Length: 299
Image (cartoon, rainbow, N blue to C red; front, side, top):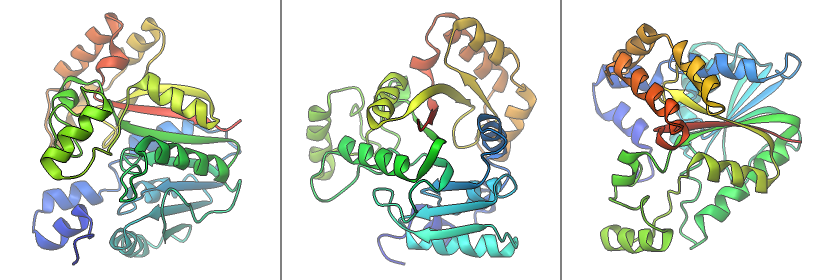
């Protein structure tokens, strides 16, 4: 293995942590997302799905039963190898994996009905060329627009910059305060700690919607994936207060509890739902959510 071997792939090879392996590779991990996306798409628009930054291909395989063709793209060759192997084991003939970058997708124009950036958007800004991370992220959004069919859908899930824990410590670089201060000061902190500028940009839901609109997307809907975008059970809309509250009241608490326990991330699901409800009552649901999911349409 070299230094560019992905963390997940390296840990799978080096450890006997079966619980971790089951969590990373479980094809049931994203069933909530698949069901949600199925509702977002029109019945006739289940032709091709594109999973950008597909990792081990868990989401790609989860979409196999809903789409005629699923393409997984990843910039790490180890991930592509692992995804192909796992998919071959399941004999899925409509799922394909390619090595490629989000800034230059190896996909034809207007050929995709659904594109996904699940926990990927924050990473596409990382580069050694000194390019502005946000500019690279917008470049990726333009690439997604290029490959989407008219009225095609982008699903983008990411951590919320303004969540209290995220403000204290960035979940990607583990640097303190970089999300709480302006980007220029975040660069100072990062360079002092790592010798590199801060490039793992995340945003609040309003800024994300602005970026999507500036890139050319329309009809942007915002949600809180609960209990998180890495293992979503349900999606609470960030809309009018009563609509959010009604959605929260329909959360299956027992199912959330089980999903978190299976992922070895146990929580008090009832207490978590109660906190989310209080935030919605106070009009702070979008601001205080740990994770965000946006669905945007190509005009």
